Amino acid sequence: GAVVSQHPSRVICKSGTSVKIECRSLDFQATTMFWYRQFPKQSLMLMATSNEGSKATYEQGVEKDKFLINHASLTLSTLTVTSAHPEDSSFYICSARDPTSDHYEQYFGPGTRLTVT
Amino acid sequence: SQELEQSPQSLIVQEGKNLTINCTSSKTLYGLYWYKQKYGEGLIFLMMLQKGGEEKSHEKITAKLDEKKQQSSLHITASQPSHAGIYLCGADKGSGGYNKLIFGAGTRLAVHP
Image (cartoon, rainbow over all chains, first blue to last red; front, side, top):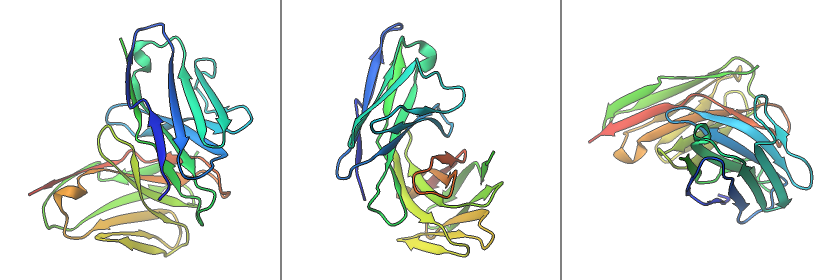
């Protein structure tokens, strides 16, 4: 299947700083990527849809000024957590659809664990 | 809004036993996905079902979508410790090709040797 990578896999930052997470589709071009967050022992919650060349679409309750998304190319989307606080500590996962697949399978990255101290 | 309910929430089985995980939607499903996740890792795509009555198998895992397209089951035959993890069902929020997925709460499976 298609491969989606994320970097970094783990990051620890101090409260008030910003952190950037990268999501890359390695063997296909993705015009649309999705960002999720997952709290311990909970399911994935969609945060936003990242669209190549245009603004991201945020889910209700997600602060767009806090979670900045940039989809600069067909293989790269970035999520920047600005002015991070301890409550932003979570597991962030991105996904992308493979447009060449018959059924638009959605492939997920390995996730990034963010800890804000 | 559409919701997905998974049952059971957790499951502990002896190695070699069969098991079934269910996923029920409050609305008709356009596409139903099954993923497996190990704690702290990404999701591994297992199968996708679209048509009512569809059934797919991969190794010892079989997934079915009912005729009404509101319920799916995931069946594991002769479970092994490698099957342990969190199983998540996800559903397309719309009928197009690039829609968001919503997820059930997950089923935590432990397989004891």
